[in-house]
Structure formats: C-alpha cells, structure tokens
Amino acid sequence: MSLRALLYRVLEKGFGKTWLGAGFVFLYLPIVVLVFYSFNASPLPVVWGGVSLRWYRQLVQDRDLLSGVWLSLQIALYAATGSVVLGALAAFTLVKYKRFWGRTLFTGMVNAPLVMPEVIIGLSLLLMLVSMQRVFGQRGMFTIWLGHVLLGMSYATVVIQARLQDLNPELEQAAADLGARPIQVFFLVTLPLILNALVSAFLLSFTLSLDDVVLAAFLNGPGSTTLPLVIFSRARLGMRPDINAAASVIIAVVTVMVVGGSYFVFRAERRRAAEIAAAQRA
Amino acid sequence: MSRPPASSLFNRMHAHPLFLAHSRKAVISVPFVWLLIFMLLPFFIILKISFAQMGIASFLPLSQFKEGILTLNLDLTHYQFIVQDQLYFRTYLNSLWCAALTTFWCLFIGYPFAYFMARAKATLQPALLMLVMLPFWTSYLLRVYAWKGLLMNGGLLARVLIYTHLDWILLKLRLIVEPGMFMNTQFALLIGMVYTYLPFMILPLYATLSKMDLRLLEAAADLGATPWVGFWKITVPLSKAGIIAGSMLVFIPCIGEYVIPELLGGPQSLMIGRVLWDEFFSNNDWPMASSVAVVVILLILLPLAIFNKYQAEASEVRR
Image 1 (cartoon, chains in turn purple, blue):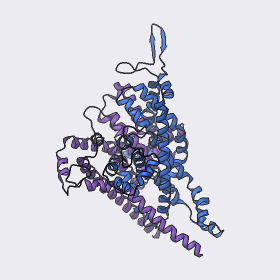
Image 2 (tube, chains in turn red, yellow):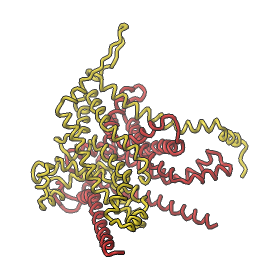
Image 3 (tube, rainbow over the protein chains, first blue to last red):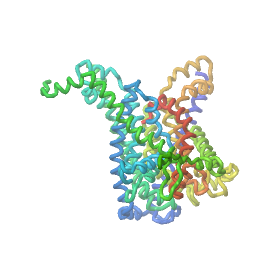
Image 4 (cartoon, rainbow over the protein chains, first blue to last red):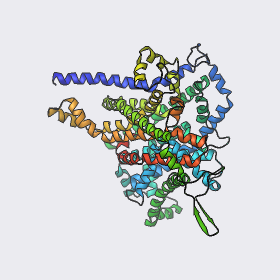
C-alpha cells in the first residue's frame, strides 16, 4: 500500500468516527437534556433547583394524563394488530403475486401513507367519515383506530415485504413437494420464518399509534383524548416540568421495549442460523 | 402421522384449483379493498368538497335535483383565492423551500453518516443501526418538544450559540430575527425538521451502501483511481436509489408538516400544514381546507411517483 493510500485511510477513519459521534450527539442530546430536567425541583424550565422526584409524584395523580395513557395503549394494541394482519396480506400480495389487475395502484396506495403529510391523511379521512356518518357512526376510539391502521399498515408492509423477499423460495417448494397443502406451507414454513418481521412490524405500528398527534386530532371525538393529544395541548404553551417527567417515563418504556424486542429478534435469528448450520452438517 | 378423516376432505378442498384461485383473490382483495375505501375514496371526497360552498354548519351539496332540473354548484372561488392570495402563494413557496432545505441538510449530515456506518466493523453495525432506529421509535412529539428546552432563552444550545457568537451568522443568514432569540424562528423550525427526519434519510442510504460490492472500489484503485475519485464515480452513483428514496422520504412529509412549525416555528412560520389546520379547526372552513389539501396533493404527486419508483430498490433493510 502506498503512503498516500495509507494517509487516506487514516484520515477517513478519524473523520468517520468524528462524524458518527457528532451525529449521535445530535440525535441524543435533546432526549438526554429532557430527561435530565425532569428531575429538576424548580418549576422554571431552565433554572436548576436541585434533584427532585416531585413531577413524577404529580404524574400519578394526573387524571387527564392517565386516562390518555390507557386510551392510547388500547388503541395502539388494536391498531398494531390490524396493521400487522393487513400489512402481512399486502406484503404477501406484493411479493407473491407479480401480476394482477391494479398492481400499480395497489403499490402506490400502500406506499402513499409513508410520505403523505399527516394533515392530509387526517383531513381526508375525517371528511369521508363525516360524509358517511350513517355508516361509521360518531367519532371516537374507532375512528382513531382506523387512521392508525391506515398509517401502521404501510410501515408493516415495508417491514414484512423486506423479509418475504429475502426468503428462500426453495423452503416452501420443498414443503409442497413433501405433500404439504398451501395452508400448511403457510402456517408451518412461511409463518415461522417471517415471525421476526411480524414482531418488528407490530412494535413499529404500536409505537406509531402511541405517538400520533395529527391523525388523532382530526379523528378524535368527545371523550377520546389520547396521550399525545394531552401532551401536545400542554406542550404548545411552553416547557412544563410535568411533561418532562411524562416524556421521560414514555422514553424509558419505549427504549426498554425496543431494545428488548430487538434482542429477542436477534437471538431468534442467531438460533435459527445455528440450527440451519447443524442441519447442513448432519 | 395419522390424520382424523374429517380433515382429508378439508385438505382435498385446499388442493383444488378453484380454491387456490380464490385464496389468491382473497389475499389480494382484503388489503386492496381496505386501501380503496380508506385511502383513495377520502381523496375523491376532499376533491368533491373543495368545489363546494360552505353553508351554515356544513358544506352545501354539489348538485341538486329539484323539480326536474339538475343544478350544479361547482364553486371555484377557493382555488381562485389560493392562486390570487399573496399569503397562500408565499406559504406554498415557503413550505417547499423549507422542505428542500431540510432535505439538503439531512443528505449532507446523513450521507457521510450512513457511509461510515456501512463501513464500520460488521460486528458493530447492528448496534449502530439500533442507535439510529431508537430515536425513530421514541415519540416524535416528545423529541420535537425536547428542542424547546434547548433553544428557549437560557436553554443549553441557545447559551452555546450566544457564547460562540454563532447567532450573528444565523442572523446574517436571516434564519433568526434577533440575536440571541432562537425560539419561533426559521432556524428552530429547520433544526427540528432536520432532527426529526434524519433517520428517514440515513436508513435507506445505509441499506444501499451496505449492500455495495466493495471489490468495485478495489478494482478502481488498482486501475489508478484515488479513493476520492472512486467515491464519486462508484459509491455515489451506486447509492442513487438510496439518495432518491431518502430525499423523497424527507421532502414530501416536510411540505405538510404541522407539529414542528407549531411547536418550534412559532405563529409567524408560514407552513402549509399549519394553514390547513387553521382553516379547518379555527375557521371551520371545510371547502377551503380541502382545496388547500388538493393543491398540496398536486404538488407532491410528482415526488411521490419518483419515490414509488425507487422505494422498492432501497427499502430492503428498513425495519
């Protein structure tokens, strides 16, 4: 290797580490500062008044917030379930059926919510629900669920589609050759193989639903104020220590969930790799 | 393995070509019908409402059939208003401009980031990917809110910027209006948008860059290309799908962004998402809000088509 190439490599290494480090500081600094200030005893947002848990104690008595949490968790659970089912069907369609009537339209519609501004999805869905009030009834938990499934389904499709594309088709063919019916092939071969992706898709649509403000603002009805709506209406007014505490709790819970979920997925993948290696040796 | 006899009929039924054809139809039609009803139909409905007149509590019907005469009430005034009104025009332009700036900065920060991530030790990469994904999973509302704490008077970043006199450069760039005041400015809006959308840029870029065959660079080096030339002539063209998908994934939602302008950009920020929100929630003018939405959709149709084309190529590692 020439001296010049060596110099390039050293420079690239150093520059790369700095860039990655700075990028991660940018991504994490606001979160760290927010969590730090949630332990601030002072009610003033930027004045440090010593360590205290008073805002956390206050959370437990905050009725609006707690009912928001409960409603949001329910909606997120149902929305994630719906998103995974519809997303799996859509991903299956896109990967297995290369040709059918309206495929371009279908692909466009699946991808649209990924990029479409949420205000537009919210407004159009709301105006449709209002126009067809006789069919869909009053706005409330159900209508928020509809919006969240629409959004979550697209993300679920992307995740599951990626996994289905990587799947070795010979595995399914082998099962079919050995006499498995299509339904059996699906439940005994395909489903276990894409289980990880289904878990990821579920977690992703769950957090998307738990996080959404805009769709919920359009689609909510009387008495259906989700957690993000409660937070947003308070955050508009400025920094508030009680929101800092609530935010820290949410961030902690999501972090544990995501890291745990990824660890589960990672371990399952490693185990499967070991099993495949063992099967090939045998 | 012995099966109960009842299931053999079931199994024979499944092997029947008629069933296979129907199961295919069922798999396709469930998500298809769902999307037609909840994705496509609503767009036709706002299109319809955008031509309607606002009545007292609701909009008036488009066509009436009374005494044997069909009357159409197509009202184009909302569109006329959008085209002629200076404020709307400037808001659209400003939204596009903000989205373009955000895309540029995300690409500027995100490309080297994704590049070095893809070239990091293979054992380290899952952890790095996890670290990029984690903020993406945690509440976006809370992350935007967190910037308030950094940028408000006396906030950490605000103090650093004043201390280093960088606020004068921002003032010169007209990103802020007064030295030392960062909240409710274009600067706060931009930093919030870049921050929120950066992972959307990094992930597709990482997906294409990590799939790249590194032997191509070795071949280029053997043929006398410097690493710099190799980077621009090989790496960048090969990551085109990732660049385009990532840019669209940032650009399109930025145009209609509501939460970030509301929390960081302040009341003066001219963003179309905010205008639409106000038309609907404050002015209660559904046809006007619908017309604004229709124009936004028209604006993003082209980038959307580009996105669709490149999304499949770049989406393989996004999970």
